[in-house]
Length: 319
View (cartoon, rainbow, N blue to C red):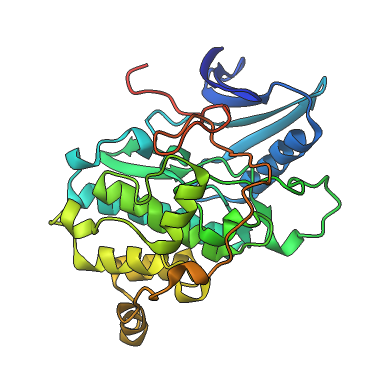
C-alpha cells in the first residue's frame, strides 16, 4: 500500500488486491467525524450506482473500526488541474470536454448534483491512444430524488460546500438549495479553464470570487485561445450566466450546445443572452460571517488559502 494523497480528514492510497493482484485506489476517512463519515458513505452509494466511462467507479465500500473506506478503480493519470491546456490540441480539449459533459449528464439524469465540479475533480487517462476524462469525488453530492432520506445530514447549517472560483453564485448562499444548474455553472468554469488555460474567476478571497462570478468579470475565451470554435464560447457564456434560469437546463443541454447539435431555436435563445447591466442585483450577496468549509482536497492556486483536504485518487504518470 502506498499513499497517493493526504489531507486533514482523509487519505487516498494505492492498494493491491491480495488474491487477484489488481491495483485499486483506497479512500479512507482518517477521523471519526459523524458528518464527514456520512458524506463518505453517501459518496460510495452514489458512485456505486452511477456507471459510465466518464465516472470513476466505486467497487466496494467498507465500514470498520470507526473508519469508512471506498475502493475505487485506480486512474493512472493527472487531473485537469495539472494539465497545461496550451499543450493540448483542439481535438484533445474537445474529447476531454465532451467526456466531462457526458459523465455529468448521467449524474443529472439520475437526479444527482455534484456540487464541486472543478479541474482537480476530473482525472485524465489515456485509452487506446486517446485521452479520456473521468469525474470523481461525489462526496458532497446528494440525490435530488432522495432529499428526505433517513441518513445523517451531510450538510450542517452555516457550512458551505464547493470551491470558490467554480461555484455558481447561488451556491455561495446555500449548498443544499441548489439544483443541477449550479453544476452547469461549474461546468462552464471548468470548460473555460480546460480550453483557456486559466480559471475564469481568479480571486484572493471567497468574497472576491463571488463578486467576479456575479459580475462575469473574465477574459474572452477567444482572446486566450483564438483557434477554439465559436460554439464553445457560446456554450461557456450560457453556462456562466449568473442567473440560473438563463443557463442550459442541465449537462445534457450544455453538451448539446458544446457540440452544436441543438435545435436551432435553442441555440438562438442562448446566442441572444446578454449580461444584465446590474448583474450584482440578480442574486443577493451572502453573509460572509458564516462558516465556510471548502471541499477542496488540495489548496486551490486561484483562491487561498482554503482548509486542507485529502487529494483526489490520482496517480502521477510513470509512478
